Image (cartoon, rainbow, N blue to C red; front, side, top):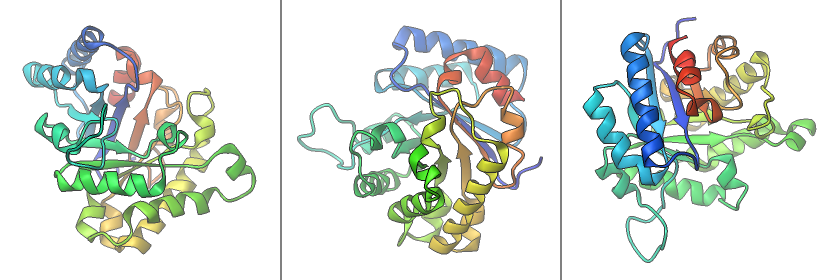
Length: 256
């Protein structure tokens, strides 16, 4: 179906690929996207490990491939004694456009709603766009509190912000029970939760801002399932893990 918002398909490489392997994958994607143009109305972002960001960005520019550079997280402080961390300002200097915040794998290791909010503060401060991850566990879905959990995560991260900042955000709905398990939420499940997300965004920032926000689905997306999932009126793209590490699979999802 035609979406009122540009579709965003994001590749989260997680902790995979060294700089040589990343270079090979970007070159393979560039070759495929030259052979079969990315459809109008679709945008692609790639989120490599920090060690590959500069090289991937340079290769995207050299190959003249229409892909946005993204990062997997950032620290909330602009500088300081934070050994091993990377600031939003450092990412912005590399021309990163999108930064993932609150991925379920990081939340599971103790990243709180408050930390996620502070990271989004930093992302906005350096004029990048956050991809805010929200989602419920299998137990929360079983207990019937999935929507409540997702709305709470949205409000914690975005409430009280100017509408124009909320409008620039991307939301990634990732049901935890469908990440890395091979399970995929049904198109109806995804559409219903994305509709609830849009409703909560309206409550937080108003109808106009909510209509501008792109909502992704993340959870074992494949070339075979992507079109059915994208059929929901509030589903505007995907945050893809494993399949994004394979040029053939990822390009098939992007090109459709």
